[in-house]
Image 1 (cartoon, helix red, strand yellow):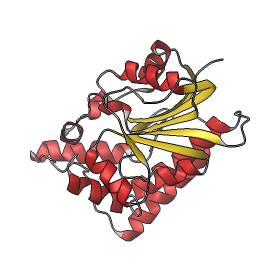
Image 2 (tube, helix red, strand yellow):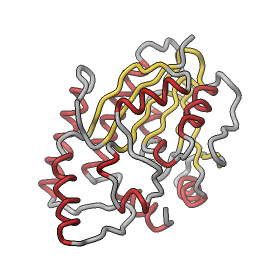
Image 3 (cartoon, rainbow, N blue to C red):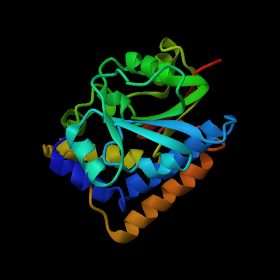
Image 4 (tube, one colour):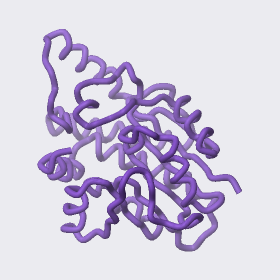
Length: 246
């Protein structure tokens, strides 16, 4: 991602409905993932910290180590006062059985050998530790947006389960997420295709009026509450809790 896009995304994370709602859903799944971990102060690994929107949420649950592959993202985070470690590929500079929780939010789709990445995340987890992951859903939603962001694939709930099993992780919960926006995304991309328009902006934000931004955020806040109790059968993202068994 270009440096200008990191700056743009960092600003949007504070106000844009998709980010606000996504963060609330992430918080719900982190809460579910940590309920059974009996440790006073959890050790949390943030894979692909990007523009930093996930850091404050993860810090609610424990001491956080941030890693990223992008020099631009790392510079932005260090300027904001966060500690970030540079990594190359999927290898992590941590000993086995170090962390209680690994968070990887919209990261796995950027990794070609994603099962190897999951194995490495499992390696640094303590027994009984959890991976909380989000990924974009459905290969049939692939667009120029995915290409510009250097995605290798979009996922399904069943696909995440298969990859978790191949990496030796047990699936605790999976669900689709960002549910209400699916028909909007399908309609928007269908219209672009019909009109022959191409979207080449990396972050691909669609500007909406303030009232709509607030409404969409509130819909996702409500969805986040329901995620504690149900699994959604469709959505534009997949979210999962994976466990390293004792």
